[in-house]
Length: 258
Image (cartoon, rainbow, N blue to C red; front, side, top):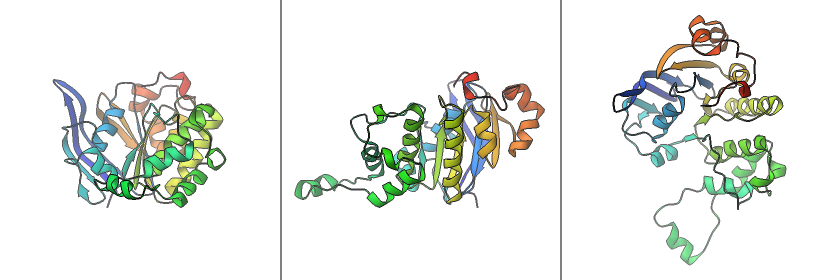
């Protein structure tokens, strides 16, 4: 059974069809790519999956149950996490503290407990493991403004992983990275997936997508026009005409970000 699946997922804004009945699935431990030209609906699709576009039509199943009626925080607590194109890191917190803030799951009684005995919640052991997995251990006590763009991107991924999700939706994680940074990111993502975390990867860097993804879906104007293995997508005439052209193998800087 797929970890995540959508059936006829549809998002409309008035008369505009942003997502037009998309069927997609992601299995545990696999990286699935979602690509397409600017305005294809990729970020809207992630928004719908994670509950930030409501209402949507169709069915979203995650970890064996329907979640399309759940608000974002319930989907997140169930293990469906995401990153954002704008990192929005806490600049006054260290890298470690950014992760601790993301890992915390407060309840209504938390403030009462803190009034009696203030505590630092979150698993330091788990945070250390995430930092190590993404090669950020040596940067744990530094602040986001002191890091390179590539390092900040990794912190954004690490922050999403700090909550120990079963599935992570990645929205343009390689935007602004150079070739070596993108390659390093791909290696890190592959290692995390090999540990059992499912991933849905949206990015314009075709070198990254085609190198790390197990399966790829292609959107155009909110509708799927192709799906298959990276090699099948690389040679699909519909995809080449709609999107790839001569972009395969080139850096994301040659493409206008969505």
